[in-house]
Amino acid sequence: MSEPIVFDPSQHPPGRAQGLLSSLIVPRPIAMISTANADGSVNVAPFSYFMPVTGHPPLVAVTMGGRHERVDEPKDTWSNASRTGEFVVNITVEAMAAKIEAAAIEFPYGVSELDILGWHTTPSVKVAHPGLAESPVHLECRVRQVVDLGDDGVAFSTVHLVIAEVVCITLDPAVCAGELKVDPQRLRAIGRMTFPQFVRAYDDALFTLERITWEDYRRTGLLPGFGPSST
Image (cartoon, rainbow, N blue to C red):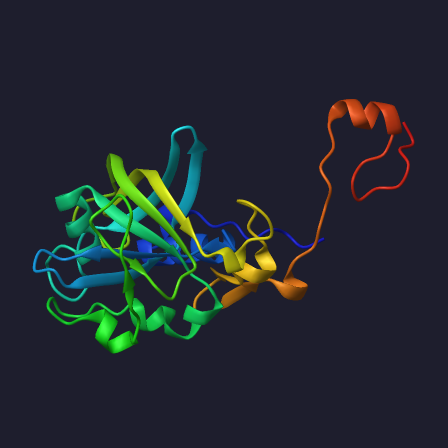
């Protein structure tokens, strides 16, 4: 057996450390976040440092960069979310896949991503920011807590961990198989792998494992994915 490769983050630049983390913690769901700018135009950007937190209250967490890499100005998504306390997570699906990286471009303020991407908005139910019509699922979010992390002014370091409550979810019935049961084959979600690769979370990428309780195991002696227990 080969000796493991040891990576000590303190001996490498921040970009390499983040790149390695991003290539190992995969696949990651992609939150395509939409917000309204102060002038009423709509900003769109993808975030794959994104996760569910808890069900009561229903919380999600998103890591948002605070500053543009190109110019020393606040990033639009963070600026809008911190100004209004709201944003919309649009679940990224196959119909949006080809334009994910285009949406990540740091367009100058005033340039409409929607015009360039050819996407369209749909009104939200409880928040002021619109959702994206191209996504079948919208999580309307209100900011609950912000944790500032990293070293100020260091690339790949300074971020805001935004914890937000999901105050409303809208679902296209086309992605559901029964009431409030999302069918992954219909949802056709896209995930982020190591740059520049993505993954399609449907068709042959899916497999099924049953979940049993301890009582079921004690009664049957069987574990999902195993034959009869030898104990």
